[in-house]
Image 1 (cartoon, rainbow, N blue to C red):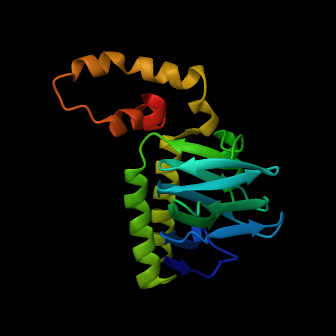
Image 2: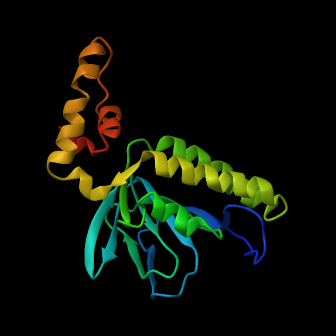
Length: 206
């Protein structure tokens, strides 16, 4: 477990700042249950291995490698790791005066559950922020803001609603890749890479 907790600045001129950032792995007991209104910042988690669950209106939704979830401030939060296959999960809690309007205008209020077409760039951006927070805490605020926005930008560019993996939408994205697959037929076929490009799981791609 790695995590860094930072003070919340009530007055600042930055687009976004982290309140905390962390990385958990091999923790089958990891479980969070927050009542509505208890956390006044955004919360972004993404899974790089293993499995876990997010409950929405009492219904558990299974998440796995390449999936993510985003909570808006004051939302009810209930999520937990699989005990049999604990998730490897990275997260950041962040805030900013105009973030809510910004994310709503781009449709990120429509769902809490997402999947990532590519998640490795997000891991790299998250690792940079985590190292910065661990080493310098709040001493370099502009750097913290830049790195937090980097995570948000990667997430927004790669995320599609998790429900889009079901039914025809996922199939259509796979079909749209067929010309490219033909062009690159001489290269080794890596299932995980093509599934990520389609925004679906390797199992669904098969």
